[in-house]
Amino acid sequence: MVFAMALILLVEDDRNITAAMVRALTDAGHVVRPVGQATEALKVVTEDQPDLVILDLGLPDIDGTDALRMMRSVSAVPVIVATARRSEADIIALLSAGADDYVTKPFSSGHILARINAVLRRTQAAVAQAPTVIVVGDLEINPRQRRVALGGQALQLTRREFDVLTYLAERVGQVISRRELLTEVWNQSRIGEEQTIDVHISWLRRKLGETAAAPRYLHTVRGVGVMMVDPR
Image (tube, rainbow, N blue to C red; front, top):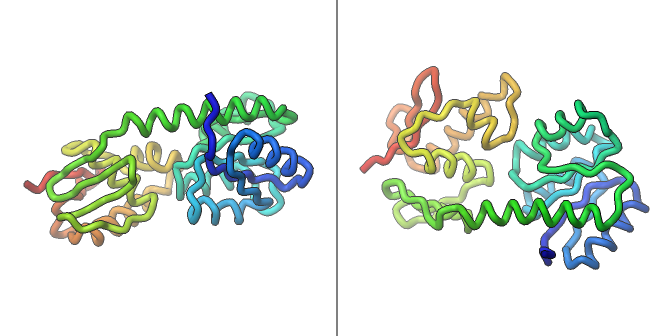
């Protein structure tokens, strides 16, 4: 099965490889956005929300693995890493950093297209299995359309805020640790990054019209984590 019209971000600084990849992906029915630097890629990920990223690790501005971690901090977009690294330790490190799959160079157009289709198939299956609407009190979350409303009024959330809110809403009444959110939502597990969670929870509270001192939906369990509560 071929998945047509996926918006694919190609992050590759070699012009010959880029030209060949763009031609192969376009011929397969995809829309390709090629960039040559990690900083450009991060901008496209946050602004254009591509369906999939092909990320070369040998970029001129930022190490590819660091770029992958930065990408994961702002988006859950599927990422296929293209790398010349072949050791088991390197591959494990890439997958741990948030890659969904990888191809080792050199690779054929047929190989990368097969990998793309496999990743898109898994991604679309996960979306199809997501509930149509999650309702918690006056809060309505549509995971498929990535829309949130509170009391019938649409809320404007960033991609990461939406992911955090949805993860908590799917687990109403459960205390979720900061480490779990960091691992499951951010796809990271580095010690010292937990403060990022607190910042996003604070932003979410503001948009939900509550505070840490007077919570309705997001209740902090001191020393443990945060819990979504149905206020009804």
